[in-house]
Image (cartoon, rainbow, N blue to C red; front, side, top):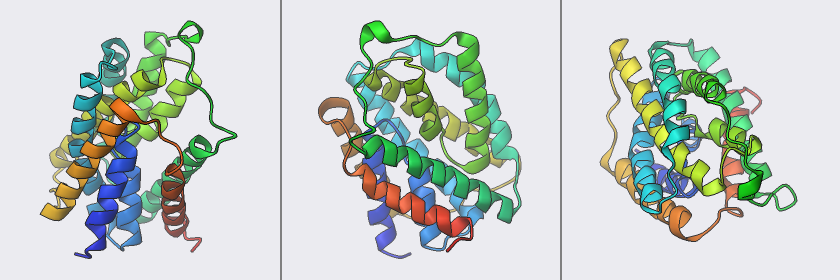
Length: 249
């Protein structure tokens, strides 16, 4: 294994965990750039997601940002959909194109979040409008299916939608996103195993890097800093991997 992979994975985990995400799109970008095959990328990203999302969930719960009503509705619809997506096997070319689009969307979202002009203040408590359960269920089901298909936990889609809907304060959205990613990642892995696919071996340095990065990032995000500037670095990584997967490079 290239020694740079654990370093890159740890950095991805740190950056993503600081905003309640687990880093699957970043792991996919890193593994793609290092030439890892798609059959290995999807389950590997989900396993790393489980590790980091577990840590992030604990940290945001400890910081008392977690509110269960929104999470449980999302999860109830997303888990079966993610299991179905995880059991489906896309052709390699279709998988790469779909992941390329996912990474491009992720890069655009990170860029908009990090760009000072586009950054917005957290919604005030009196300006919130919690979505109806049916809307949350539809959102959870759609993101869950895409999560299982692509090997991402769905946080990169869920967070911007919840922010656009002004569903809750930013920290509470992050606290709901982390466990959402966790259950979707587990469901996606379970779907793949039920379909007869085996998990690729993960190296100990990669797992340690993800755990350490996730612990540091989630602690910073839950208890200390808001995130902005270094997201531009992840935007570049995701954009390069997207261009490569879409055959533009």
